[in-house]
Amino acid sequence: MGFVIPAWFEITALIVLVAVLVGDLLLILKRPHIPSARESTLWVVFYVALALVFAVILLAVTQSGDAATQFVAGWLTEYSLSIDNLFVFVLLMSQFSVPRRYQQEVLMVGIIIALVLRGVFILLGAALIENFSWIFYIFGLFLVYTAWRQAFPGKEEEDARTETGIVRFLRRFISISDSYDGSKLRTTVAGTVVWTPMILVFVAIGFTDLIFAIDSIPAIFGITRSPFIVFTANLFALMGLRQLYFLLGNLLDRLRYLHYGIAFILAFIGVKLVLHALHVNELPFINGGEPVEAAPEISTGMSLGVIVVAMAVAGVASVIAGRREQAAEGTDRTGS
Image 1 (cartoon, rainbow, N blue to C red):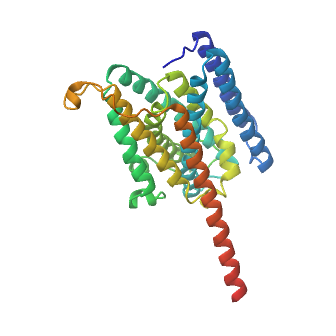
Image 2: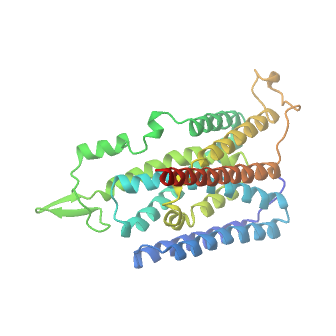
Image 3: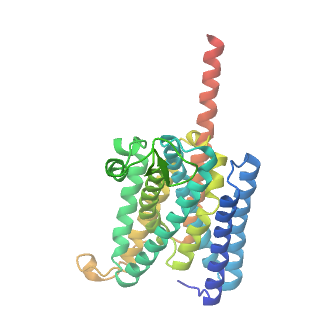
């Protein structure tokens, strides 16, 4: 790995970051409201700045540029995937008609579920990597497949409003009221205690988080092998996600090429993982079980550059396409 992160720093950092996340949650529970654009912007800027400050501290503690670069690259990868996750959150909130006043609480619960799931996947991924070097082949090929699915979604992925099987199962076997009762999970209707639609929202978001965790954890292990950096990058990517939801909620549909940028990143990291697998190869049917020294090695710095350029190109292309479409619509209205 090339650097050592002191145990005291890992423990201290995790305590502080979890405290920040819990404080964010308590703030929502104490004062549920619809955040303004200004409030959302300030929070997003704060969490982005916090991530960059953490990278500088990591550099100072480890005395290694690799540690800081791996964290930034991992954070940007997870952040881009989290923005993609927001597309699904927007659809879910619309599908289940969640009152805007309570969407912050729903998002925070979703973020906590995502953090727990990713923590589990990180531990499993670290254990697999430690004991089975061939798992890099699996991770790499899976990311290439995920990239293809992201760039060219099938009918199931395109119809994001279709309820998942588990939600349909819940509707069939438990009693659910027709309307919300604040943010409660249970309510009383005609003297009978039933579930509110909020349970469906939480289940749907939890299922979505599971799918994204399966995609994102192999992606970041393609950048760093440090479980601490993997977890903190995920933690920072999830911080400020609810504020980003309210800030970009009405603009997400304009980022029409974002999924191509994310697909390119996933494919690139997938190829990087396969190349790394060749360097640590132990499979007898590949080069007789010996490492393939001729396979090129992709540096973390190059990975960071590819991630930044891919997201920048996707964002700029989306903006240009949106402006051209608006100009065309204006011309049509003028002509008519």
